[in-house]
Image (cartoon, rainbow, N blue to C red):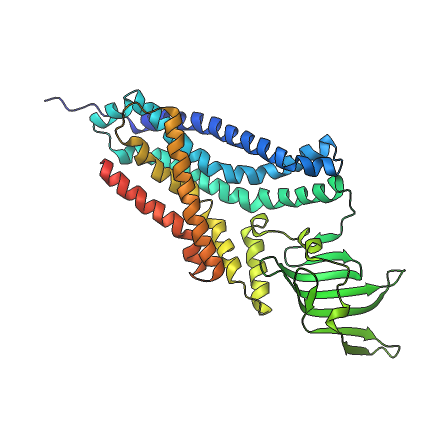
Amino acid sequence: MQRPRRIPVSVLSRYLLSEFWATFRLVLLAFIGLYLIIDLFERLSFFLKNDATLGAAVRYLAFKLPLIVTQMVPPAVVAGMLVSLGQLGRRNELTALRASGVSLYRIARPLLIAAATISALMLAWGETVVPLSMRRQQEVSTIEIRKQAPRALLGEKATWYHGAEGFYHIDFIDRPRQTLYGLVVYHVDEQFRLTHTTEIDSARWTGERWEIGDAVERRITRQREVLVVPVQGTLLLQQEKLEDFLEVFREPEELSYAMLSERIDSMTRKGIDASSYLVDLHLKLAVPFMSFVLAALAIPIAARPQRHTSVALTIGVGIVVGFLYWLVLAFGVSLGHSGAIPPLVAAWAANVICLLGAVYLSLSVE
């Protein structure tokens, strides 16, 4: 009896990867284009209200593009896997491969390596390109579109803000708690000479006014002595609202893993609860890994024997898979931010569940 002819691994891998890359590129471009169109219509009133020039609007969207790519790559990977393997199934090529003794693992191996490579690239992309582009986007929004003078200097550990009472040094802005931590106000005269400083432990925005924690004023007397005087909280921060500071606040997704880690360390040293931001820190690794996880889940779905499968149906399955993943991820992140589950579990639960589902589907297909 003649043994079935084995297909060389390199030939099969190149063929599968060429089919995937061709579909992946088209789907990714389509997703990015659709995202840009929707975002443009959402920002149109913002551009018109501020009489933004066409160049400023283009630069605003261009600097947002790296973040869009990060968000669109995982669904594009899923759609690329489902569509490319679905086309092979409609042409009965998957059936021929399986009949020739090619296992699902051998079919999936080059595709999973490609997905892992994409995940690694997205991790590096999010650590280098995205933080810089988001900073430039904020500059375009403030200076070119709103036509405001830059009022803040954003650092990795703190923020400098030019306010009504002087120059504000803010250790941390906690958006969920609507609180400023470690605020120091440097009061200057008309010649920009330092007159005194005001140190505020914390300031919480109630919606109408600020609730100030412990605050002291430090003045240098003529005898070169530092005079420390307690300050009444109601006399401070009467001109600024929380929105003024949030305009210069950098969201966790705008920071690299190293930047966010330093922010959390700084908060912990100052006694500030940083548990919710630990979830965002773990997401820096979990979200790029999403491309590999969804690819592992999509391969056995596409490899299942099906009749009369259309491209629209295949893409619909991909949308459903992606939606379920984001639903589980959002639920876990919400529980993590509230402290109901550990941050590590909150960030990685969706990936673990999808991997277990991928293993189960792979075994059922085999």
